[in-house]
Length: 62
Ligand SMILES: [Zn+2]
Image (cartoon, rainbow, N blue to C red; front, side):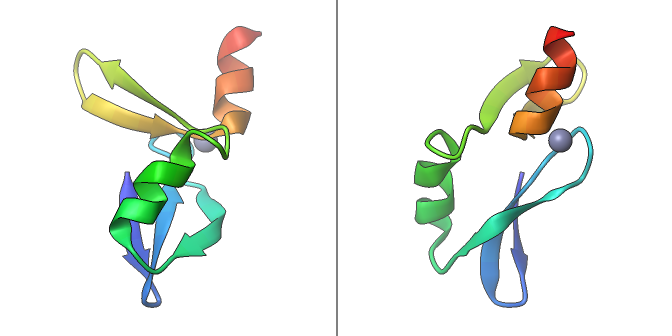
């Protein structure tokens, strides 16, 4: 998901609740940078769309 923290939009991993290091002034920038930063949006059957950080994507590959 994307959450506003201290006036900045941050990517929040829906698996580990980790915040992205980068913050964005505009919501749309957070959406646009998600891919380049290595984050992925995946659709979970139960929970709907989830944003997954690069670390959690690695976990899934193991
Ligand atoms: Zn994660």
